[in-house]
Image (cartoon, rainbow, N blue to C red):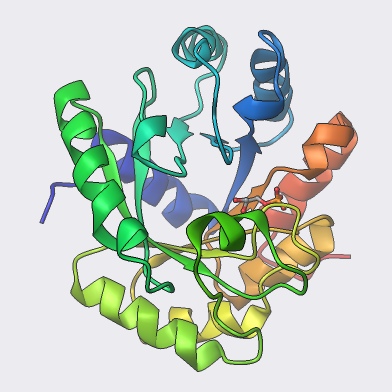
Length: 255
Ligand code: 1GP
């Protein structure tokens, strides 16, 4: 099993201390040269704990330069969340090394990992072994289309649970329960609760989370990292960022 790196240890310590973490996903596909820096800094100043960077295509050759600029301004971990091996570029604190375990497409079960693993090793990048599960969220999502996989049905939380159990046995340490970027509905809380009960995996949950209340409910169910992305493409409200942060960090009921 690969050793726990600096960034993963830091995440684990913060989860231990705070209960759950607020992650903001920055999409380099929709960002101009300074947008990544601006939105990352705004999130860091208003309660985010982690910055993730990832998008469907990432056709952005300036990304390593932009990440370097962002890392000079913020002290939060900046983690790459790639959609495929070609998106692995230098400059990040770590990469979520994901395997799309809910699907049955060998490209996303092993092929991208073989290609990406070579890059991760040659960049000496920290990898966080992460099971990625796509959960049905209403309408068809880009990740479903691009990956050519079927999501886990929304009303079958035991199915995502058994995939989490298998992932844990295979040595993965995090699981990302994903409704898909801009999903109609977030992941149903039962999926989170079942994985929480059956495994020790750290649970990341994202996709379609648009309100602090929805974030809080998923923390209550057992999620330890809440990811929001699409929302911040149209809203840049420090007040709302702070509300999300409070909802995610609040151990008590939230209103
Ligand atoms: C997508 O889970 C992330 O991979 C975030 O989803 O963009 O819907 O917040 P949203």
